[in-house]
Amino acid sequence: MDGKIVSLLIDSFWKILLPGLKITIPLTVITFAIGMVLALFCAMVQITNVKVLSQISKFYIWIFRGTPLLIQLFIIFYGLPKLGILLDAFPAAVITFSLNIGAYNAEVMRAAILAVPVGQMEAGYSVGMNYFQIMARIVLPQAFRIAFPSLSNNLISLNKDTSLAASITLGEMFLAAQRIAARTFEPLALYCEVAFIYLIMSTVLAKLQTWGEKKLSVHERRDNETGRPL
Amino acid sequence: MSMIELINICKTFGDGEVLRGVDLQVNKGDIVVILGPSGSGKTTLLRCMDFLERADQGVMIFDEERTELATASKHTIAALRKKIGFVFQNYNLFANKTALGNVMEGLTVARRMHKKEAEQIAKAALDRVGLSDRYDYYPSQLSGGQQQRVGIARAIAMNPEVILFDEPTSALDPELVSEVLDVMKKLAQDGVTMVVVTHEMGFARQVANKAIFMDQGVVVEQGTPAQLFDAPREERTRQFIRKILKEEAEDNKAIDTAAEDRTTEG
Ligand SMILES: Nc1ncnc2c1ncn2[C@@H]1O[C@H](COP(=O)(O)OP(=O)(O)OP(=O)(O)O)[C@@H](O)[C@H]1O
Ligand SMILES: [Mg+2]
Image (cartoon, rainbow over all chains, first blue to last red; front, side, top):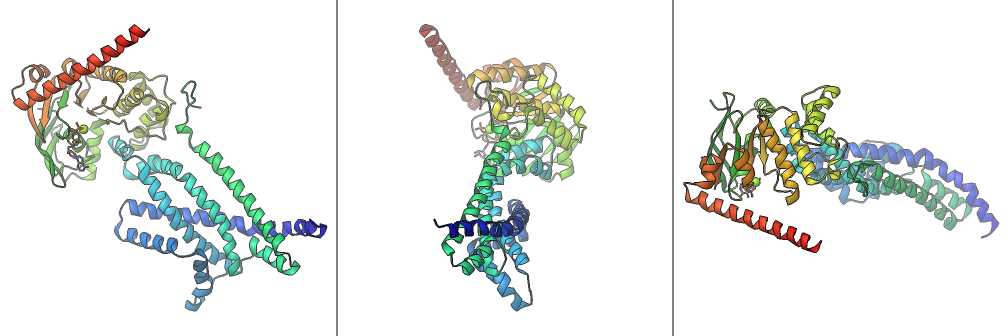
């Protein structure tokens, strides 16, 4: 590799990483958190069969899982101004990604809640607990454990998908890379470099997933020698 | 006056009439065993009593208070559940809680008891079922017999007036059955009122003072265990008892041969 490219890569590394730290990561964290709230809400209204809300949440999931994320971004950022709703790139991205990840995670959470044996719910009733107490203390903690790998997967996807926001002028990592590539005529090097940074982020998230799974599964572990809790 | 009187309990699932007018009395201190073929409605009857299933019709008089099962309010249900403990066939322990946590949960969350006090009661309950050395174990770290004993401790910790047992030993390996039955015998000696669905004839004979034979959603016959097992009046009861005794004899023979095999090998 010639020296010019090496120094370009080193030079541009911080210029790409900085928007990563300032925009990509916060965007991922914020939208995942909002999406989780949405997801829980949708999963619960479907499971408890709240009539109208359940219909609405099914419709919402149908739309946001059934259409391309890139087009959702375009509609919200470029389309809504036609209706007089003008959003900056960052809020537009927050709204779109939250709604999108919320739809995916709603299905994950719904399945996970249903996977907790219903007998535990009945045991809760039999000792006098009410529905919300049982949900909060018995079912949801186990549902989160069950959902954790799928939620982690979705989080890793979301982190990469934030690069789509470059197309609505959000100055995140990919847009930063695009700009440098255009200026230096080195698209191959720069796009590989930005891909590499995403790869590192994904790797860190995957490590966190492994650690989290271990942490969450205390009640499933058993020391094979003694049968004692670890 | 009985502590509990059930009158004309009916329950239909879809087009299956599962309970067709069941009447039952339980006195304080009674150990009632319920027997009957698979699908006769034994589980459904117990579940209706604890409102895990909503009966279509019928009355439960508990401590002289009369409740229409089909229309009981949330408030009434909560009050009755306080008086009734339930032990499940599949234990149904809270998988995310330790043995101690399982027993404390109802006390701290439903009864709003202070943690300290709840912990004392829960430990005493676990001691009573012989699990003083398993407080901090999660259900997945316990044997079936131990899990069921936690289930029993969870029920007795709430200090109910009656405990309903739905085939508490039928999910257990044969060698674990007796540790659970022993705990139940001890509770019986302590005067705990129990309604037990079981096919354990030995337990029924030794511990129960009342046996009930159910078939196709009705009580066919009732009496003392001796009456029901040795001198059944109804043909259906006779057939069922004969079948159970035969199965039991075969099981015992199988266990004996297995034991013999082991001794000859060793
Ligand atoms: N939730 C349900 N929905 C539909 N049918 C049900 C339901 N629960 C029970 N049944 C039916 O009701 C009948 C009686 O069931 P139940 O479990 O009360 O019988 P059981 O006497 O406890 O039998 P077993 O000895 O096998 O436990 C069965 O035919 C069963 O299929
Ligand atoms: Mg049953």
